[in-house]
Length: 227
Image (cartoon, rainbow, N blue to C red; front, side, top):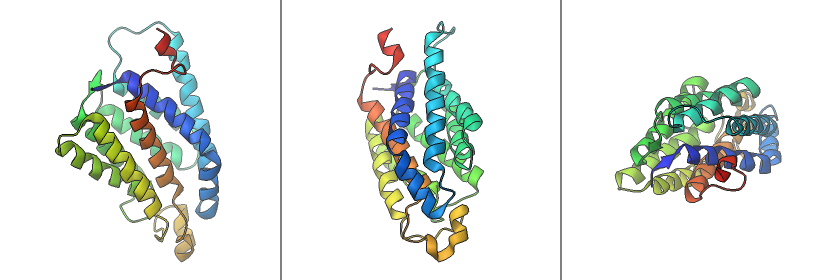
């Protein structure tokens, strides 16, 4: 079962729901070691993305088949224009890089890996961060490694996403004992230890939503499901 543009849209909508549900948690995590706006900013950004998807669904279908990359590019441009702080540019770049490698109607397991690799490269280059610095890179890196292993073992698209989501969740929790050496949290030095990185946690939510979207078909919340 290759993943198509409708899956990408379900992914975005499920992400918006997951972020809304976890908004207070993400905000509290960010209050502990950051600016305290991660949950609010992401919630506002993904609500704006859903609004743009709704607007697009109400318009006549454009010529040509919609691609996964079309959806991811819309996410990128919307987040970059609506989300303040560090999360807008970081997630925007991640989705933009992912869009560039998914300009096709459907993506298979190797292409899913490519999407995750591109997102990681976008976050790492934009934030100038590496693994172990207590940032969202920790979660993205773990997700990519797990996805590559699952695809290498002949796993399906769902297998790849399931592995990525589980690894990101584990990696987010693993940031708790780390001392931040990058970003706002690094100003706290040793005091940043004992707190989960909010960007790593939101990354786990994003990838969990990708897996959930792959396991489900169109939902009533998806305007295209009525077409």
